[in-house]
Every structure is written in structure tokens, then in C-alpha cells.
Image 1: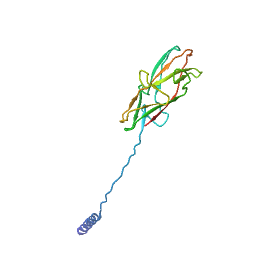
Image 2 (image 1 turned 30 degrees about the horizontal axis):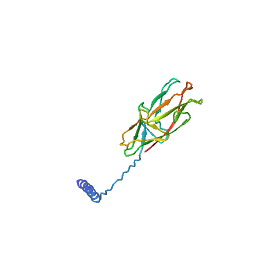
Image 3 (image 1 turned 90 degrees about the horizontal axis):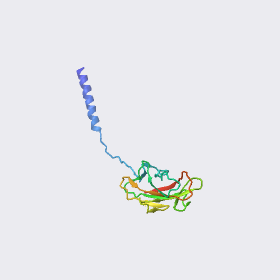
Image 4 (image 1 turned 135 degrees about the horizontal axis):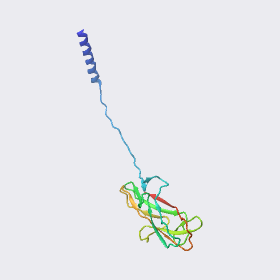
Length: 177
């Protein structure tokens, strides 16, 4: 009986050694790929259309005001913020508004919906001396991958005969990079 057990053990050992002798190793590689495309965010939001570049609020004025100043503010209450991929050159083009040229005294106009208009303009400096024309472009420095602040200012001009009410305008904006 002991010899049968020894034979079984020796047979199993022989099979194990034979299996090891027949084992082989194969080597190779795995290729991994990731393609990144340039992208930008406006005020922390990404997308290709319908983004909110901010708002220009001239506040509350009496109907006899002379001038009212404002700044385009992004969603968080600060200046407009543009974050683009490193190496891109972002450019903001401020297109037409809904009521451009409807009132003398500015290239753009706020409307009350009843045929009354308040002229206003965009400027690129706090002193409001550098007019940004319709379709004007603000070119930012080459992006390093860090958000860039865009300061855009506005000035509305009062005129005689304006009735009280809420005056609004919607201006199209494009960002290229």
C-alpha cells in the first residue's frame, strides 16, 4: 500500500515537472491614447452655445439722469472670467444688440418695449474712453490654462422725455480660441 502511495506521489510530481517544462512566456505591450482638443469656459461654464457672458446693470436711476455707469459682471458677481486651454489665444467679439442705432447718443440702445430708447455704449477701460464698437473684439493674452479676467464697462446716457420703466437690451457675444 505504501508503494502505491509512493507511486502516486512520484507520478504527480513527474506530471507537475513535465507541465513546467512545457510552459512558455509571451510578452507584448498595450498602447494607450488620449486626444485633447482646445476648450474654453466662460464664467465657469462650458458649452458651445447659450453661455452667459455676464450682465451689465446700470442700476436704478431717475428718468432725468445724465449718465449711468456699469460693468459687465460674470455669474459670481466679479468681472467676466475666461478659462481656456493652455496655448490658445482667446478673443471675445461683442456683436450686435437687439436695438443698435435706435437712439442717438450711443451705438447701442436699451428699450422699454413701448418705443422708448436709452442710448449706451461698451468701453474697455474704466475711464470709458476706449469705445468698443459693434463687432469689436477683445483679444486676450495667450492662455496658460489659468482663468483670465475681462473688464468690460458700459455707460448709458439719459435724454429728455424718457418715461419711467425698465429698459433692456440683449447683445450677442462670440468667443474664439
